[in-house]
Image: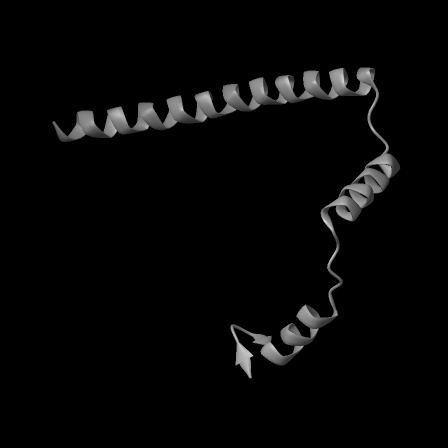
Length: 82
């Protein structure tokens, strides 16, 4: 049987084969996976934050310019009508 493009029999098989873990085992697995993550240094985090702020400012100025341009065009067109 097909449901929204998925074969339901395959989904039933996946449900049956998924192992159920206890909350304690889940926490142990999360800690093990978290220890494998390469966390950024303080300097990398600060540099990335500064770059985000700079790019946000640049995009804000760009969209301010685009918005002002369209505002000017609309005001001109409304002035022609009235």
